Length: 178
Image (cartoon, rainbow, N blue to C red; front, side, top):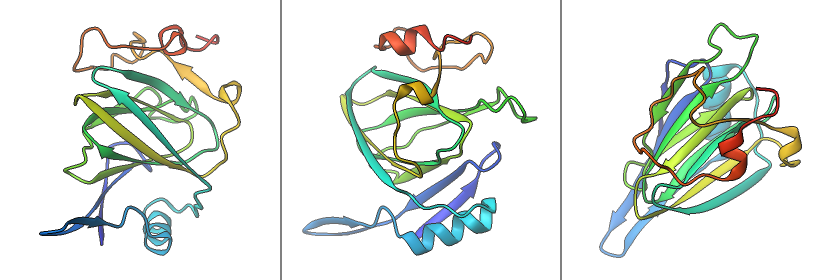
């Protein structure tokens, strides 16, 4: 069972899945192809098939910066811990270019965020450690096919809940086209 909400960014959706819980623990369905395909088609008009699943584990205050491309949809889920995630519209042809919205998915709140192509996402870990899971509609073809935007790029004025995040050289530097 899943619920869906629209956000202020076109085609960015928030899903909440539910967990069955009893004295043994919990059981969760993170993804059901028929349900998600139908909902995404109804809400966005796009027909999606997810081809790849990826997992990232990070420690508190690690910030993984804005990455994206022009073809990949992503469905992101927090499996453990808590994240502050920002989705940035990086489509220069869109009237929403540069607009962003933040979300706080956690293992407890069961939030999932659908991110369309030409949108970057970045997140910082707010718990001691966390596991970030995402489904992709395209097979990853390396960073040369992606754009990268600095997490603190002054063009977008993104607010972050941490002052000195731990970032990679790529995320500190951003794209060469900036």
